[in-house]
Image (tube, rainbow, N blue to C red; front, side):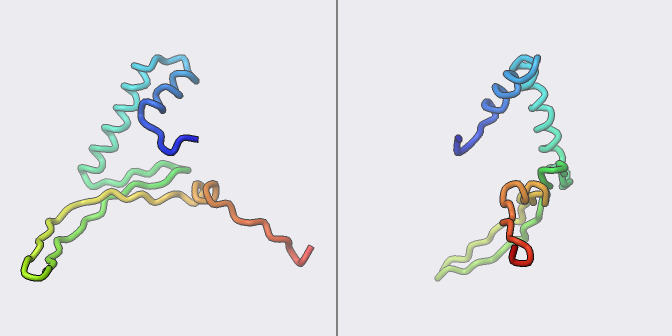
Length: 102
């Protein structure tokens, strides 16, 4: 199994398992990614049932003093991912313990 999957890997896989060409699938995926980007730009969360939720979180500016320098960070937003409980159970299955010692 590959350690990382690229966008091209997804497009090739989808075109091999459907009647659509790679160009059509690429357009479709780019539309979805544009929706994600616009949602993040507008500070909206994106929920994908069974997968998880992407949220934007604001990081406040920090003032850090290192010896004689003061580092001033700026206010910025980060994207966080919270997996769904369904995905979490698939990734980390709970061990099956016998009940009542049986």
